[in-house]
Length: 119
Image (cartoon, rainbow, N blue to C red; front, side, top):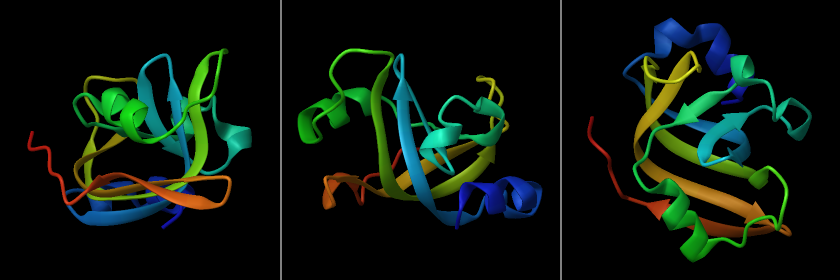
């Protein structure tokens, strides 16, 4: 699903496992999905990725952007469970991540595969 579809249906998808296709952004240590690179700064149009030490997993597996405020801003897919977000400024978060793949230069790179984070 696209981020915009999830945001529209939001409450009806809570606690469901969903697949998101979009752009993964890591900005100042906070990871989230948006619809496109043009909306990378629109937190109200984003879904927070709630996974401990996500930045460490990324650094070990996927080359990031050098310099600037964004560590990552790449096409990606992710599978996890949708929740209401209460700790961040995002409306929704994704937990219990099963699959997370980032596409760099057209090549898929697995960040997480069959790993889970329980609340």
